[in-house]
Length: 315
Picture 1 (cartoon, rainbow, N blue to C red):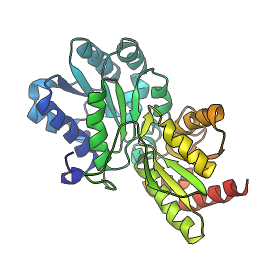
Picture 2 (picture 1 turned 30 degrees about the horizontal axis):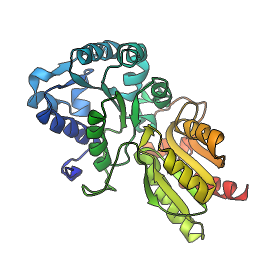
Picture 3 (picture 1 turned 60 degrees about the vertical axis):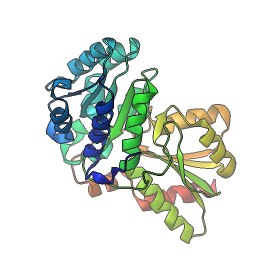
């Protein structure tokens, strides 16, 4: 696997993964919704000008066109901000891609509070819930640049439509090119017997590891799971941590209703009930502000997590 340390931002990483795929696979095309500079899909355009299409600020049309291209044997990757890539284009995703069983890969950038100054209209908390309602869609939210690169390439070879949830700006690394990163297989970052922290995406995996370190000082041992694949669900890992810990806190940068936490809760309710809690968005809309403010506003902080662990251990 290629070392993703050559990239400076998540947006460069996800586009780099698609460009590298396109060099070997002539069926790949890229569609953007007038946001080429925001996601750096101009890199793809420079490499393959005849395979790049700017759909304009018309996300629904873009999804429908991508479905048509897929029916002709092409494999489109399409991009917009996560709010527009899912909400605005939802009927076309459901019918032109899902219902017709077309392989299209949707990149939704700046999900949840990562949207920051773009504010409430651009801050999708419901995108995972929406995409979970479309049968057959693979859903991923990698937690670093290396896993973003690896999983973006793996969804292509998986042969099913996918939703790739990623920040645009900044970059972090917790994995190397030698680490095993596999679609549909969660990664255990820490092994503890008192409580399991199941986290999706960059923000939440970072917070889970920070929480684990503080808990260690208090004599509490936590398992930390990087839940990079929302669908298909890694039930083997869920069964293992249920048996080991009996207490699970699911952490997501999105709404609980229909989201990651609710999907895991439904699995446990039907199979191996455990004590659970959730760090997620409740019945709220987005706000405008820097990431530091938004973390405080929605409770995505270490003190909140420590209180949740304290409460679940006391139950």
